[in-house]
Length: 147
Image (tube, rainbow, N blue to C red; front, side):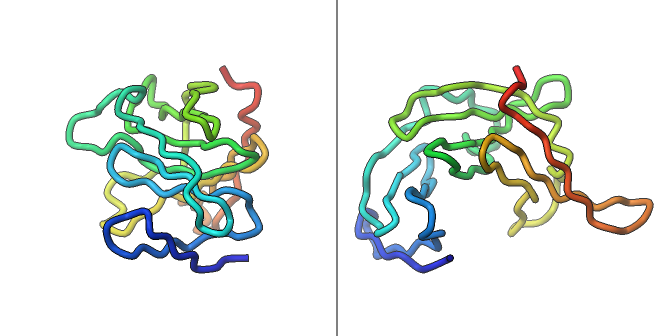
């Protein structure tokens, strides 16, 4: 269930669209990830400027989601045509770094673009348009065993 949650952590009043059925929400602002509980109370600030390699002309983090008390965040770092994903706990510890093909990432999708993927229970779900058929397909990858 989505709800608008207010927080007074930032200089101006901020509202976050949150899935209140999940125990934690994360908001990114610059190099920081702010972790909130389901009531909008600030729990933790995580500074990623020390642990994420800066890619010129890009922010540190590309996209992120929270599942099972872990933060799954993609960066702009690439290796062998794969995108770096870092997995963190809610206390700022990097648990893993992995590289995924992330077929759903499309360069130049526009200003309000979001890539069509999410992680839930160590599975990556991507929504990909099949260019031949014109239909959307769901690609599921178990990332628990990827090195």
